[in-house]
Figure 1 (cartoon, protein in one colour):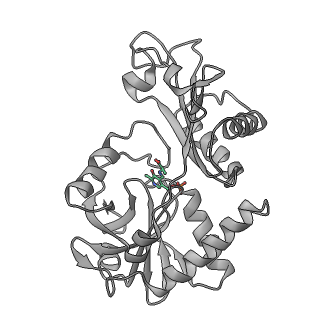
Figure 2 (cartoon, rainbow, N blue to C red):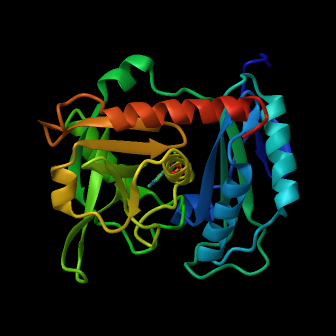
Length: 295
Ligand code: PDD
């Protein structure tokens, strides 16, 4: 086996990825009945590990699946997975499903969850892409009401993101109709959180059941507060999205990325804005600290 074959963790064992198999009756396959996490790794150090493990617990609670490991056990497994794979910078995926059982929607009794973990080389967007920014389109958020659970059942997100790809864009900015207060409001992207800049103030939707509580979202808000950038966490209206001077997407894999066109129209002057440039510097400094073990 070549040194470059990814090593994964499945059914309690580390193995090369091409030897990892899952029974067809796994509920992850049959129902999408599982949750997952994605943890970026810089210089072999997992980024915000505790926060990711805490969010995993929240997702497991959300689907009423007992956490198969303690925080210390997860830390140990993640550390081992990173050590067994090539690359200083990696992205670690953890997938936990309700296990293998005869097909029946109701929870099976006495079944062990399936735990799968893999690591891939971390590929952050290129400097060129960050210098131009990416295009996004808007779409109606037609997902369920528990978007705070990082569920493996991602069909709505898959269909929504494909709308963006079909339009030659990178992400879809989701707007959801609310009864109270009435109107359409920003939730997030199909695979990222979205920030809006209006009059020098950073606006972010509140972490509720309509969006995934992003780990990068938290970092960006912390960095804004620490660096005296005005920041408001509150409902963000469709109008504020459409008239934004800047739009950003954030995620573990894209970090902070400027959206410079929305529905084919320029955002602001169509270039990454001044607040983005500041935030990106703060984010890079923070990453450097993580690399040095001081994060
Ligand atoms: N996705 N919202 C959604 C729907 C997401 O799928 C993601 C991340 C985020 C950002 O969360 P974080 O900052 O913790 O990565 C928000 C990951 C990267 C994925 O599914 O691959």
